Amino acid sequence: MNQRVTDYLLYLDGVSVAFDGFKAINSLALTIMPGEMRAIIGPNGAGKTTMMDIITGKTKPDDGDVIFNGSVDLTQLDEADIANLGIGRKFQKPTVFEMHTVEDNIRLALKADRRVFTTLFWKDSAGEREKVNRILATIRLEHLREANAANLSHGQKQWLEIGMLLAQDPKLLLVDEPVAGMTDAETEATAHLLKEIARDHSVLVVEHDMAFVRELGVKVTVLHEGAVLAEGPLDVVSANSRVIEVYLGR
Amino acid sequence: MISQAILARLDGRGRIFLGVILAALVAVPVLNMLVPVGSPFHVPTWLVSLMGKYLCFAILALALDLVWGYCGILSLGHGAFFALGGYAIGMYLMRQIGPRGVYGNPILPDFMVFLNYKELPWFWYGFDFFPFAALMVFLAPGILAFVFGWFAFRSRVTGVYLSIITQALTYALMLAFFRNDMGFGGNNGLTDFKDILGFSVQAPGTRLALFVATLLALAASYLFARAVVTSKAGKVLVAVRDAESRTRFLGFRVERYKLFVFVASAMMAGLAGALYVPQVGIINPSEFQPGNSIEVVIWVAVGGRGTLVGAAIGAILVNLAKTTFTTGALAPYWLFALGALFVLTTLLMPKGVIGTYAAWREKRREKLALAANAAATPAE
Image (cartoon, rainbow over all chains, first blue to last red):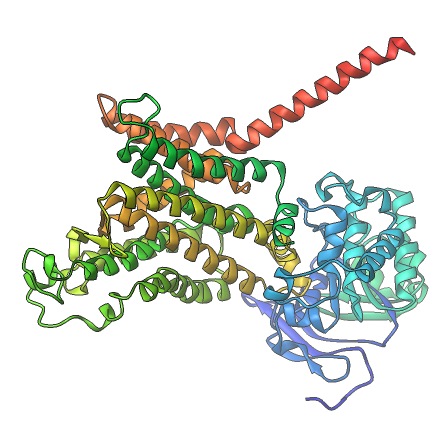
């Protein structure tokens, strides 16, 4: 499978997965172009997180194609392989290494050889310090670099996790509900941060907060019962009668 | 250059720890050999061996702290690796007996003659040669840990499930070693040792040398563990402990890090067992008892999990208490005391002796700083 079969960065087609007979994802088709930022919305249980699990290798689909970068079949790989291919993931609940400092969190995430014996003899370098500084500046946590991640506020943890994704320098970032539990000011800052990141990365954002999605101003995909219900600009999508029906209940 | 690199990786606690080891390295031989027997400062040979035994436990506790404290793998089977190291050196010591056994067979150890063995089993070959036995001290536990860890970590067995199968591992080994036809001496184990490297194991000089070797091994194990936990790999281990899936989604092969630290730790436990056996003069299957492995967890918890130095101190403190309790009128209550110790530590000092001490010092420093501020303010 070294031949490029598609121009899409991420290509999902006919993907299905069932848990105990319940179809969490039902012949889902979704494509992301290189450099694109996409927002995914949908009611609870629409399969948003399961879709991310499939892309990152946590869940194996029962059926369908998941092709990354035009040629790599992601269904055959595990989480570490997929991460090293260049897909970064931010969890719904901020997940950082609480006992490490902010700086160490970023350093661990920095793109580098991940083998045991290379990390055992790892030496700090000026280039690495420079990269860490740049990321800390982007996520606005420079003043907290020596603080333990456990002592950060909820919003700061979210940013730190986004910073860790940046440090991985992935081709595609999957971001699960980045503004859940944030204040309005934090939400606005996060939207700004994501837009900045989207300038040289492809980003897939799952979010409930409509104001935030509007702020992002990108193409929106609506998921419902494990399949795509509608796709397009937010205004068009939110005018769609099926979408309104799903969101407001039948 | 190298010593500088080592010192840079030590914290204040580690420097004190190595300082104490260095002091003991000088003081104990002097007090044992040069100070006359009648003097109150004389350290008798039995005490040297007893301290040597505690130091072996300290190495074992360090090994467990490395996997449990830093990577969150609660192994309840480290006693098995300790015992395997002990058996490896025990086999060497058996072969050194030569024709001096009760039955006078120049090749076969006594228990084999007794059990009607006609020739030496193949797995005893090479054990008359010290370097081979020394290699096996690391290889036997290392290979077992590798095979066990390979399957367990790859199948993502974690938490209590992993703890339970490590218990099963040591229990299964105990049953196997109890069998006479395993070729390891059955329930009597290996004993009646005569020489190690040509020196009598009973001679005071040899006992002192074994104590010194154990001290050096403790220092080396500590430096090794410290080098691991302060490296980037050590930070990955802590990351695995605190957020395993996050680490995996960052692209780290979690199972390989676990396997590395588990094997390294098992080898360290093997070394501890190998130093223990010549000092106590016997190794038998009871060393594989599940309870032994659980006791190691208590040592580490009491001393302070994830601190290395704390683990070593915990091992020494609890065993000191054990020696005191199990001799005399209090003997029947030792297990209650041990249980109470574990419960009370978990409830009152969750960070162990070392953690509690560090917190107390931190608080005192803050109070002093506050007092200094208060004193300075009116002067302005």
